[in-house]
Image (cartoon, rainbow, N blue to C red; front, top):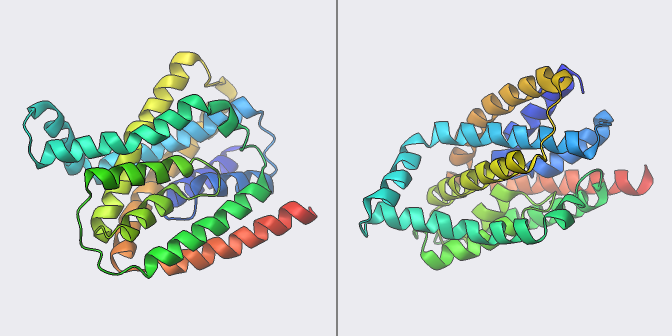
Amino acid sequence: MDVLEAIILGVIQGLTEFLPVSSSGHLELAKAILGDTSVPEESLTFTVVLHFATALSTLVIFRKEVAEILKGLFQFKWNDELKFSLKIIISMIPAVVVGLLFEEQLESFFGGKILLVGVMLLVTALLLLLADKAKNTNKEVSFWNSVIIGVSQAIAMLPGISRSGATISTSVLLGIDRTRAAKFSFLMVVPLIFGKIGKDVLSGDLNFQSSEMVPISAGFIAAFLAGILACKWMIALVKKSKLSYFSIYCAVVGVIAIGYALFN
């Protein structure tokens, strides 16, 4: 992988991590188009690094909210900060369970499964369309809501299902305020990303080769900067009910991906 390819993939990751169009699906499509020949271990390492970059961009954008979450955890008082912290933790449980129990099966869905990506992009398109038409979205996230949103996040581990699209759409369909839905969606994934990175580092699954450090670094920086821009943009778009545009985009890309897989 050269530096330019790494930067392209980094920008794609940074944008699509927050925009509801599936970052994992777009990375798989981009790798196929660019002819990425990385072995699975190297590809996994690069993907994890890009996710780490977007997690950091989330911390930058929501640094006040993150501070409140940490404050709530260590105050040991039944206040709004502690409740929100517990909701974030509860929302993580489904993805943690699925990730630990079905890690090998999930990894098998990556690495050129373009047909699967295309079909899942169509599912994402449907979710976004339904959410865009939702009315009476003025509620706060409840504990039960956090469980349901967490299940959506676990399902979104499949390439082509947008994590932000699935969790924000689920939240909006549950009647949650759109701005709260976006913030909750972006914050709930941060601990999971850091936990995944920690697990991979301790297990030795990440394979950093000296020859790949320059492109990996370039991809990291590109993903971080693109992530900051996309995160701010997405919050504004969700608030204005513009999800239908992304629904159309996902449907078009999904159809193209299916055609590519069937005829290439």
